[in-house]
Amino acid sequence: MKKLKYKKFTGLHIVCKKCNKNIEVSSVPYRGCVHPIDKQKYKAIVKINGIRKTRDLKATEYDEAVKELLRFKEDLANPINITSMLPEIKYELLVDFIMMYSDWLENINVPKYEQKIRTPKYIRETIGYLLKLAQFLKDKGHDLEKLTIYQVNKFMLGDYYEHLKQTIKSPSTFNHNLRAIKNFYNFLVYEKELIILNIPKKMKLLYESPNPTTIADEDFLLLLSKINPEDSIQTLKNGVKKNRFRPYTKDGIELCAYTGMRLEEVTSLKYSDIIMSADRKLDYVIGTDLKFQRAHNSDSTKAVKTVYIPVSPELENLLKRLNYQENIGLDKYLIAGDENITRSSLAKQLSHSFTFYRRQAGLEDGISIKHLRKTFLTKLHLQTGLTESMGYQKTASVVLKNYIDKTAVAREVKRRNFSFFRTVGN
Image (cartoon, rainbow, N blue to C red):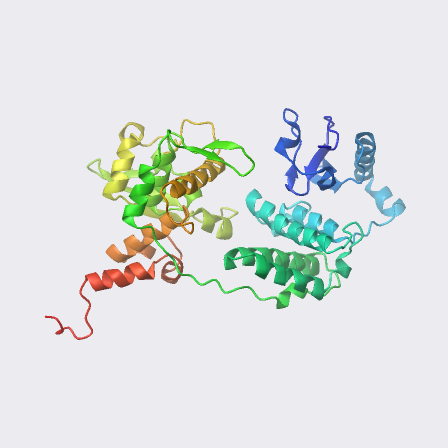
């Protein structure tokens, strides 16, 4: 497959607008990108006075891209010449504004006080949703090399809205797509100050009925019994074979279940987070609410929002298997602490492994590793009623609405012999 020519040159990079990332690395060019050349662009990334400046280059040949990069550097070094001699570049194309939005999400050329910390995953997914819109318009016969943002009207977006409703079953996934478009238009109207209608403002999100479900005890134990190295090879649709077993897979999944923390928070737990009592027994474990941190404390000006994880018999047994007594106090991860793997990669690996073994156990498709958190919080709520006091969520209403399995509550109430008239049946 044809790709843009890569040869190392300071400041010159190749980006894939489909992957939404730099795809060249000196040791491994293209980083496994499989998208065609029309999705790739040369990009200039240089620093002037400590400030990162970028520009998507128009050239598609290596030599011309180098010349364009050098002209860009020269322009940056002579800002007076830029404003007095060069004609103003007026961007109008839809795809150009999508790329501008991508840079803005990465805080490129954004004043420090306006910057927000966003994860690479969030940026990648957001731009992916917008590129899906662009591809839809292209499939409808619109030339993306000529389609301006001013030509995108309410009927075109209306067609895409109906397309999403017809092709996406999950209200949550539908809303992720639509929110990306809404936020994109907010960027165009309020950040770029374009004189356009904020069309998506009138588009309604689908109602997401929060009806949490939990994993039955016997189903979870069945899943755990399937985690072994003998039957662990998954063949993907493209024929690639993946080994879903690692020595720490079962421990990682159990730690999710017994702590009630989100997956990324579980992979970040360390031996130093285990708190011992005065008599040197397990007291509790301290976790960090990373979702809250990103949303409300990205600049670390407030105290870290901690979660006080209770030590159940199951968690105690797991910590013993993880040799906590020999490692207590160490700045070492509980899961895969000796492995050369990033925490984000570990989280993704555990999620894929859970799905694989869930299918091996014959459990329903609607169950994911996220349901372990719902299961834990439902059990904690039913047995103690102290869930929100431990810091798992900001308010009790969030816990009750999004995490508590109402069917489990109804069964527990019946088990406790609830009666409308207390004398009936006595």
